Image 1: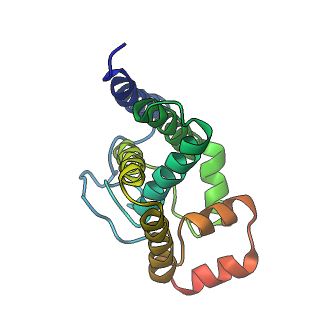
Image 2: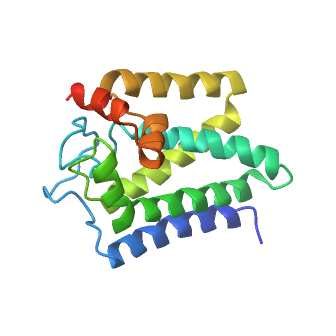
Length: 186
């Protein structure tokens, strides 16, 4: 094995994830027929269909979290092998998130009423955003990484009444008062 092996495996995980999602019938790109760098309308059939959106910061935070956890629990592994594990975790989440059961869960208990799954382009971009977060966490001081995570969460909660923490909360333990507050901003 060479030093490039974990990076080649990481690329393979991304390609296999995209191939699997195409195989199960997920749209390769937005049904609108084009791909945008940014889509900023949350309540829209185009949300999670383009390269980036208001949920991209949550995937960067995933990278921060995975880097921190793997630095603690797998500190003897090289950066590249920890990145492989992080990419596997993110890819697994993307596959689970785009399963019919989770899509229906999102639609029934979160503000994502028009959510029908991510496009494959969006999934690949989300995984790449996690990789960016993982890389940033490796290079930045811990306090800067934590400050960025908090800033991303505050920004998305303030601007769209959603974010990683609220998304997880509402998916796992839906609270009607939170759902009402989220809907009031729409």
